[in-house]
Image 1 (cartoon, rainbow, N blue to C red):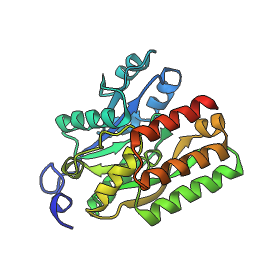
Image 2: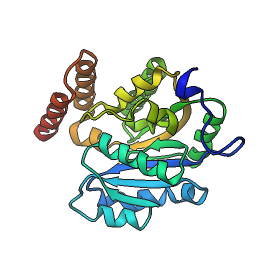
Image 3: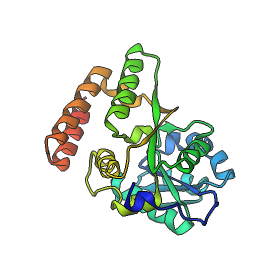
Amino acid sequence: MRGAAAEAPAGGAGARPRLGIVAPVLDEAAALAPWLATLQPFRARGAQLVIVDGGSGDATLDIARARADLAFRAPRGRAAQMNAGAAACRAAGADVLLFLHADTRLPEDADALVLDAVARGAAWGRFDVRIDGPQAMLRIVERAMNLRSRLTGIATGDQALFVRRDLFEAVGGFPAIPLMEDVALSRALKRHGRPACLRARVVTSARRWHRHGIWRTIFLMWRLRAAYCLGADPARLADRYGDDRRDS
């Protein structure tokens, strides 16, 4: 590999890189404390936990400040919030970034798995995903998501994408678009090598699948992804996504 992907992580020869976990949140007060509790073992082992609030109208930020290394507000939008969190991790000395949604739980050894993958030469990667719901159709959906990601080298936010900070900065971070920012970042990172596809599973909430219906959610995401691949404006796709959610 060439360029940024060929450089050693910061921290000095032989030093163990430090992990920074970045989570964008918005109006998550009802479920935030138990989710943050699952991340405390990573903090105890040296990971930096940064929570970036997009302007919640509830107690999200107060709850986060009590249970994270850093919690602050940034302009609303996942891309903007995650970029702000990455910048904060840089200031805190994190060498590897892991971007985590507030409805996704990491495996207990996620920090070791990520840092070991980086030590073996991975510049970026993601986890397999499991959707937290009993329906048999969700098992098919998650298998399809994992297989598609493995074949295409594209990671989605549900899969807890991780990346060396130097490479993240070299590609410009998440593009300032309101939807498909994870797909766009994956495309940029692929130019520096394929992702490490970790078979350990993160568990993501099935709430959107239950709220909008499994088949409706599948077809919506397929339409949006296909339109994006064909060059549709992400802002218009975000409006379409919002309209579909309001109609459900």
